[in-house]
Image (cartoon, rainbow, N blue to C red; front, side, top):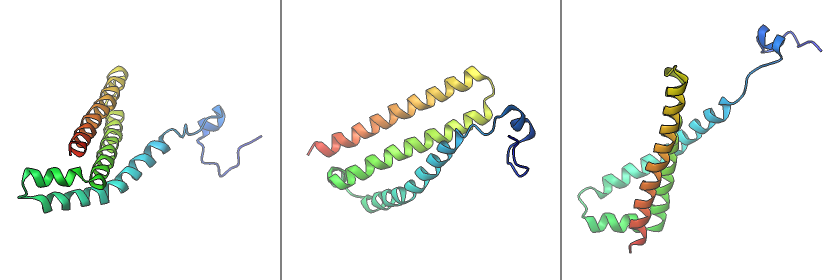
Length: 131
């Protein structure tokens, strides 16, 4: 069966029966969704930090111990680290051309993001549950 004339496939893709691998669409959407989620979260966090400027340690501790605030900060941290990992992965894929260096760098970024996110969330939860 011949491909229609208005097909988006290249000539070589039609010959081989291949097209887009479609693996990048999920990554692209994840980057866009995390970016959209970060806008209100970062605005809220920035406004909160500005509001807390000059406050003592106890006031900041009490603010972070509030369950709604703690959950929002955990969501902010998870979204932020996931978004940054996605962005760094794209930069590595685009600009690192030695395959083993590229794979090593991507793995390092992924594990680093997981480690930093875990430590950050642990710190927030420790404050939130310390009463």
